[in-house]
Length: 86
Image (cartoon, rainbow, N blue to C red; front, side, top):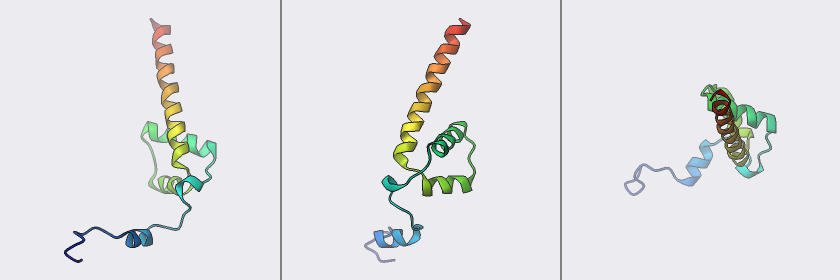
């Protein structure tokens, strides 16, 4: 490596190491697959192979929206449970 790069990879080198996949905003993952991926991630159980499939197929915007919705439903559910118990 040359002294000027400081060990950083160029964009061309980085692109050559990534598999061919569409840009993030053009990925078409199903709603069910997105919900399953977010649910398993919230629980903390995720296989590496499934994670790679999700990276290739799911749209990050959809994951964020479903994750926030799931978090909102979890909080509302916990509040309802506490009010029901107390």
